[in-house]
Image 1 (cartoon, rainbow, N blue to C red):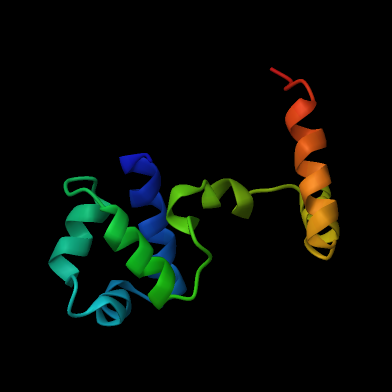
Image 2 (image 1 turned 60 degrees about the vertical axis):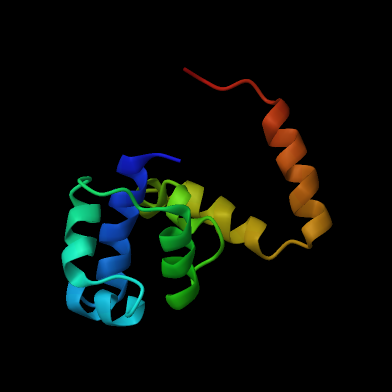
Length: 108
């Protein structure tokens, strides 16, 4: 888990809620706007419990706070087409693709 990655995703979550105040309202009483500001600035750690709370309250998938969501937003049309095609596959096919992808060399 990266402090910077969670802070980046907190900014995205804020936008999903329509602003910091709305996000804070979703997380009351566990946290507040002042704490969220510090978390977003990287001055306060976003604990595992807080990350899971954000995911649950906003209806996001598990571990959403720990993945690079900004790169997903910036994906190319080709990458998005691949994503869209994979998302409709049965779970067994997705698992097979993961195995295949993990065995491929990574371009540098």
